[in-house]
Image (cartoon, rainbow, N blue to C red; front, side, top):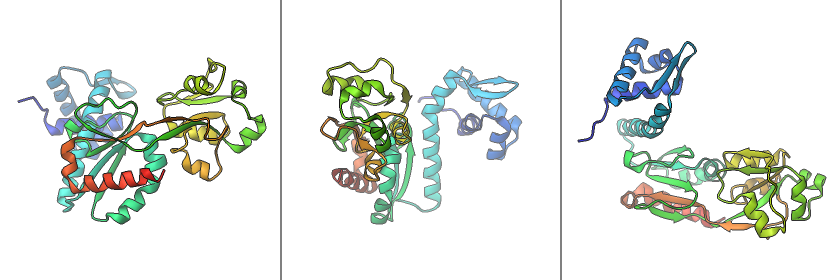
Length: 294
């Protein structure tokens, strides 16, 4: 049987990693700082690696510690949540993990409808760029973004998205944007995790290459959309994720939706065995109904 460290040692490691302080972690776990230090030291000895870099200024995760936290942190959260559910008599719990931007821009505004339709289901939602590890029991369903290369899992596309240049009405008016070529002279905004990048769009709709320099880059779509809303430039983003911004007239497709690249890049992903659970079945059915609305 594979070696599994004692849970107390893992809890101490996770608390110190989150708090960046042994004393704060000790207070949270109702232990002494010395006890926490010994538990972390035992875990490091058991694993044969240093998980923290210690200095006069405090502690920070080592490279190995960061990798380990990414794997075990979600599992510990799932164990804690499952234990709380069991103690509180909650049987219909559902754990959904999601890519951050679709979670905040698309999923969250719709969750009240799911809660009203299924008050018997206790929903737990987390968001991160890293995928949920189903082997560790971190989630029932993972809403992922990217190119679907996830063997041995059920992968269901949610919707077709139109990727278009977006800007605030004031920015469009100020720069009198009417033709794709004019984008060469204005700040461009890009989320570097996006499947579609500016060179792809310029190749499709302009006779020119994309500028070598993109003025503003972010690590998620929500930040790019917010930047465009603030008038910082033109963002190349999903009209689906920016739907509320477009509806509220905070953003406009600069050249209309005709000059868009259509993709399927958001997916509901889960092990086939999870579909047998009633909460999973209910959430997937609701999710696809919402996605079909656009």
